[in-house]
Length: 480
Image (cartoon, rainbow, N blue to C red; front, side, top):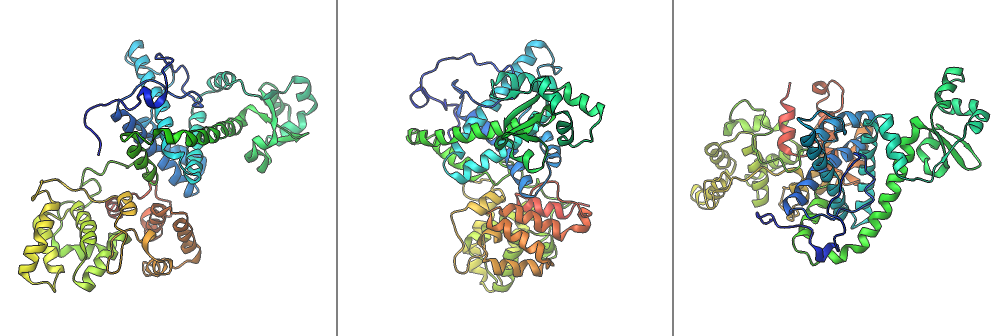
């Protein structure tokens, strides 16, 4: 899709005159107020954005699954180490100069990837809302990762219009401030507040704290102690980001002439349903939990381990003795990924196409099966389709077609009927899946179905990861 040579992604004619080529990143926390202006390669432009999107996709999935902030942090912190490192100025590198180079690279990647995704997600209100929600949560996780001194330094650098509460006023309100902090009044609890910063801000800036009765309010001002300032700074972050995205959307027409960048941005925006496994489906055996290859005659025995998109294809293949082209591609590559080798694939499809004469099968189908295994034509190794490909493919299922994502393409009554056949009968569970479908969170609906049909395996706990690949679903069902 993109050129292999490292062409420059940010050119002067599109992004304005350079004013400074020596940006430094002294702090790891960032409100992203200053756009980047250095040039980067097209590979960096796309690669950095994809890495950030893996983090945001996992955050989005976790929020949709109603995970707590603590649970989300537990999931995201290991991913940050891989995709968006967040090291402090004092971490132990191999040498001072090497450490500075690494920190500069990490923070530059963070800075640029945020602004690249702004370009991708500014195009509609729905995309902007999702981006703000997920970026705000990412900021919150990172804010919680830094120590008190670093937080204070960062907040002081922002020149915010927060009013510091003087000691006299704190003394007058001592009991109210302690009680609103969630503690009974005592000299020890008062001492904690007395020795820390408290800010006065308009109460509408901290709706989360007001809703949970965590702050004292007087004359329209909320009194926010230091330990709750994450809500304040998050509000500041999301408010500024919302304004910035609206400005970016107005500027987007100036980018429409750039044939290199627009396809990348469109690709990033449509990939936003994915989580941390995005772009890593190259290894067709990545999710193969089969200890070895499978035979053609074993496929039907394994159907109970398939996601609905694949079990549906097998059902219609058995009923009709045939699948149309897109169904054969989707199902055939899935079977390839779980360990069905080419010779067994030829046997499987020949047995399944029971109504088709031998000469017609050899003439019309054999070549395509071998082609998917890289044995014909350009000898390309085709990958099993991930959820993004299945959900966003241009070939919408028509009459007689059975490919696609059931959570997207099935009529809701037909989907519910299929779920009931899988043993999901509780109305609350069915309504929850319906809600995910209505929100177009198809991969979350599939993940929920996995959880409901594998309760014993999961011991009643939610699945730690989000389903974003049919072969991943299959592999997870076979885990002990």
